[in-house]
Structure formats: C-alpha cells, structure tokens
Length: 365
Image 1 (cartoon, rainbow, N blue to C red):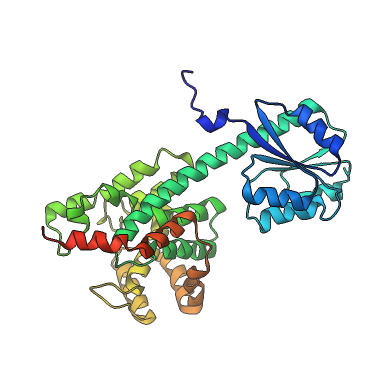
Image 2: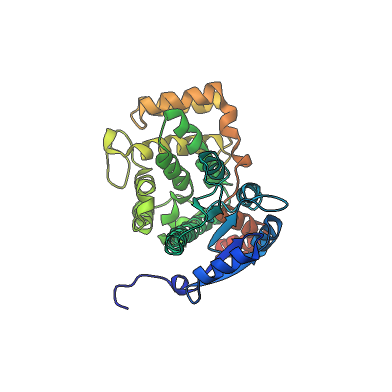
C-alpha cells in the first residue's frame, strides 16, 4: 500500500503470553485475542511463564496476580531483573484493584493494570497499544544497534585506541551527572561516545589507515568524517542531540576547529562537553606515538589548552574537579554493562580477523 511504512514484522501475528492458573480465564483470553492478529501462548503459573520467556520471544504478557507458587508480582520482577526483559510489555490482570496493589505492580515493572471482570474491547485496545509501542521500540533498538555496530567497526580497525568508545560513554555519564544534565542529554552523551567517529566509514582506507602524516589534501578528506557521521545519524529523531556531538566534537571555542569553524556557545553544549572527554581520553591513554600521561600532566595540558581558547573554561573547571578529587569515578568504565555492539567488537577482536585485516593493510602489494 502506498505510503505504508510498516515493516513485515508489523503484519505478523502478535505473540501474547497469557499467565493464569485458571483454565477458564485462559480460554476467555483466547476468545478475546483471536487469530490472525494474535497468537496466544498459555502458562498456568509464574514458573512456567519464566521458562517460556527464556526460549520464546513474545510481544506482550497478560498476567494474573494470585497464582500458586510465585505470584504475578514476583514473576514480573523476575522478568525484569533475572531475564533482563526490561522493554517487554507486562499487563497485570487481577480482581485486586486496590491502589496499593496497583502501585506494587508498577514498582515491579508492570506497564498496565486491568481489573477483572474486564471489558473485552478495552482489553483488546490496551493489548494492541502495548504491542504497537513494543514494535516501535524494537525498531528503534535495532536501528541503534546497527549504527553502534558500524561505529565499533571503525574502532576495531584502529588497534591503537583500545575500548575508546566504551570509555567515552562512561566518562559522559559521570561528567554529565556532575553538570546536572537531563536524562535525554546523558543518553546523547552515551550514544555520542560510540557514534562520534562513525563517519570514518566514508573515509578511504588509504587515508584512514595511513601510518605517516597526512598531506593537506588528505587532511581535508579526513575532516569530512564529522559531516558524514552527522548525515548517517540525523534521519533518526531520537539521535538529534547525539548528532550535535558527531558533527561538532572537533570544533573549538576560538573558532579554529572543524567542520564549521564555530565559536564559543555556537558550539552545541553537548559537543563542548564531549570535547573535554575526548581530549582527556587521548592524553590519559597509551598510543604508539606517546605514553599514557600521568594525571598531573593531563591536568596541566588541559588547563593550558583551555587558556589558549580551545575548550569551554566553565565546563573544564567541573571536569578537572572530578579528575582531581574523585578520579576513581572515571576509572570504572569496565564495570559497565556491555551493549550488543561492544560484545560484537570483543568477538571480532578475539577472532583474529582484524589482525589479518591489519596485516593486509600493511602489505605494500
């Protein structure tokens, strides 16, 4: 149909897991949620539901509270904590409609709460809305994962930076919280840590992997990675703030940066925050052309460059306070939970493929 942007998964039957110890209730929900729109899977208690969810992907869970063994509250808690299914919609179905039970259900991660006896049309509408939100979230999550994986490919090709992206994502959360930034801004810093150099995918290998100094012409091409990266990420509205980081993280306060020669507060706030993290990582990490500088040397260089007009002095003051007084906060990036792209990078590094790729790149033939 013209103008229909839905994916093939939107036309597949929605899988609904019904968890209730009463067979009559499960049959009633079968009647309410009919094929071809829905495929109903049954579980007679919480334990069975957890076993099913370990091996089967579903779109929504409809769950009774009062069941033998573990009740609906505990089952919901385990779905979130033990199985890690934080985005799976869970709708509680129960005759316990008191406010305390509603609050308890939300506390353990339930998304909605329907009191028995329920109206069939209302229940169907709520299930449909939950599934639509789930499928939209899945598409956004898949898109982010693809972008992250592409960005990790850039990181993997550079044997000198280590786990640069994960470090920057962690630094961004620490620094952003110290600045009192919003959740959306913190999320943009997390994403920016991974995506900031994704535009290097568009840079020829002869330039990107060149061992020696770039010529002026090559340097002009290299600078385009910020523009290419912003173009890759900008179609996603959820990436709007992260795009500022991708495009502007090489700008400088005095206007000597690229690609736009922005000055002062013309440089977006999150890009100014990220610049400080990027230069810190470069100074404090070992590279082929330099050792990892000790903390006092890092501080001296960052203060000197700020005085020259490179970095935002107000933001730098806050960062250096962290670096001087609680540097351990910046050193805990290894304890972060790895996203799928970080796991992919780890697998690539362990496979030996990248070693072969680098050797091939060094081969003059």
